Length: 328
Image (cartoon, rainbow, N blue to C red; front, top):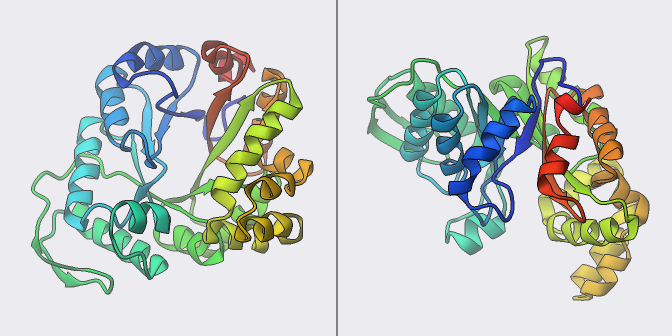
């Protein structure tokens, strides 16, 4: 994988099966291989900040970002403090990745009300802009109110804010009020569609486009597609992702999966996903084939690719090296 036009090449961390305390050598290896960005996630494993805080201390040259921090699961003030602290630890190298997340994470796991997603993301961006300025804030933002908060430790360099965005509304918000967008669960060809919406709202202003890309390094297509189908059913039955793919025009190809899933037929849902959909949404194959496929995302407008590696029948170290900028 060659670096993007911005000269940045990322990867998703932490690596599955590697304890956090053992990541120091991996971060050094990533740096030596030419990776520039580490992007964490926040789902059901490590929180988004701890792996990056370790990286900030261990490897002071790497860029850091969370893809993504849900806007509901931390209060506004705590979210501002967490992001500002990470930016203070790694000046000029931190990006705030924000998003609505999902009802499962917000409501089912954290017991919070999941509503007015677009407005909550918009309000959080506006609050953070004020908080990072060091201004004392007493304001009703619409989806939450803040009374008398002032961030007492403002970072030397303010972090850019990127928004996880799927359909036009959020893509436009990312282009209009944020510094970039974070894309997820789309094909390399879909990137052009999403980037066009961001650019439409940005009106000529530069915007970063980060993409988390699921990469199964496995030369057995049947095995890779089996894993990919399980991942697709886990994500694309979430309503936001389902609507995203209907918007992209993939609805007819996925309707069989949605129907079977709604009927409680999990095996039927897996079987209903066409091979071509798996091949579009999940990068798989040899190291060389995966590197070339990820490069298509970059060629179509992604400025920072952050592959999430799933090595099958190959050592993680070999997969990381094979997809690195130095291998290109």
